[in-house]
Amino acid sequence: MVPREGLEPPRLAATDFESAASTIPPPGHISAGRFVSGLDPFRPPFCEPPNPLRLAAMTAPARDLHARSDWTREEIAALFALPFPELVFRAATVHRAYFDPAQVQTSTLLSIKTGGCPEDCGYCSQSAKYETGVKASKLMAVESVLAEARAAKQAGATRFCMGAAWRGPKDKDLDQVCAMVEGVKALGMETCVTAGMLTAEQAARLKQAGLDYYNHNLDTSPEYYRHIVSTRTYQDRLDTLEHVRNAGVAVCCGGIVGMGESAEDRVGLIHALATLPVHPESVPINALVQIEGTPQALATPMDPLDFVRMIAVARITMPKSMVRLSAGREEMSDETQALCFLAGANSIFHGPKLLTTPNPLADRDRQLFAKLGLTSMPLADTSLARPA
Ligand code: SAM
Ligand code: DTB
Ligand code: SF4
Image 1: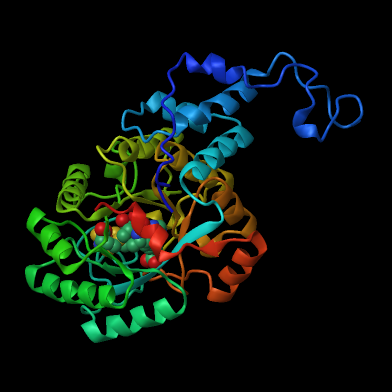
Image 2: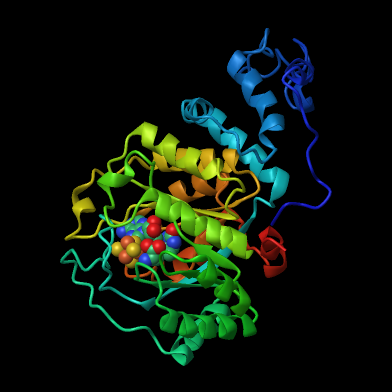
C-alpha cells in the first residue's frame, strides 16, 4: 500500500479545470505516437472539440486524489450516474495514486464465537431470531485460535480477523479475545476483531493488547437501516466507530449491497462512510450472501456491474483506504472480480470460509491472481495504512 510517502498530490482549484483541459492534445495531434489520424481506419480523427464526458474523466481525477470528508450526496450520486467506463477509469486513476494496482492484501477470517446472537440483523446466519441451521457454539480456546492463525499465515494471509456473534463483548470474554490478539500479533500477523458494539474502555483494552483493526459496519444507508436491523441503532454503530478511532485502532467499516436497497441508499451508505471525520482505513464492500431462514433470503440478487460501481465509488470517495472485495466472491465470476480490482478493490478474504459461509478455495484464488498478474500485498505495505 499505501499512501505513498511524498506523493501527496497537488491541490487543484476549480479554475485549474481549464488548465487541465489544456493538456488534452489539440485536434490533429498524434496520440501517443501509435495512431496517426487517417492511417488507422478504425480510429476517427482526434475528437474536436473534446467530448465533455471525456473532458470530465480526464480532469476530475486530479481533484479526486485528496481524501475529503465533505462529499455531498449529489456528488456521490453523480459518480454512480457516470457511464461505466468513465467511472471505472476515474476509480482506476485514483487507485494508482496511492497503491500498486497489482497488489491485493489478503486476510483470513475465523468465527471465534458462532451463532446464538441476540441481535436481529436481517441478513445474518448467526442471529438467534432466525432458523438458519447455524449451531451456536462457545468462544473458542485461545490455543485453537492460534493454531488457525498459524495455518492462515502459512497459506499467505497477512491479517487474521476474528469474528464473534455478540451484541458486544462481556468483560470476561474480552480478556480471552485480548489473549488471542496478543498471540496472533506474536506470530507476526496483523490483527482484526469484529465483536459488535464496544465501549471506549473496551476499545482501549483491545488497543493495549495490540489490536490493529476493528471491523464494525454501517451496513446500509441511515434511512434503510431500520428495515434491516431493529436491535441497535445507526447511532450505536457510529458511537462504536468513534470509540475505536479514539483508541487509536484502525477502523474497518463498510456495508452490504443486494439487500433490496435503492440506488439512493447506496449513495447514502457511501456518503455515511466518506463523511466520517477520518475515512475508515479499510472499507469492506459485501455482496449479500443469501441465508435461508433470514428476512433477506429472498432479496433480488443484484447486477454484478452495480456491485462494481459500488467498489468504484468507494475507491474514488475514499482514495487512501483499502477497499475490500468482501463477502460474495464465491458466487462471483472471475470477470466480475477482475472488474472490481480494476475499479480499485485491493483486499480480499482468503481461505475456504468467511464466518459461516463458503469463500473461494485457495486454488481458485491462486489461479485468479495468476491470470490477472496480481500478487499478495506485503505486510510492510499494509501497515502503512494504520494510524501510528
Ligand atoms: N457481530 C458482530 C457485528 O455485527 O458487528 C461481528 C460479526 S458480523 C457477522 C460482521 C459483518 O459481516 C456484518 O456487519 C455484515 O456487514 C457482514 N455480514 C454478515 N452476514 C452477511 C451476509 N449474509 N452477507 C454479507 N455480509 C454479511
Ligand atoms: C465484513 O464486512 N465481512 C466479513 C467480515 N467483515 C467480518 C463477514 C462476512 C460474513 C458473510 C456471511 C457469513 O459467512 O456468515
Ligand atoms: Fe449478531 Fe453480528 Fe450477525 Fe448482527 S451481524 S446478528 S450482531 S453476529
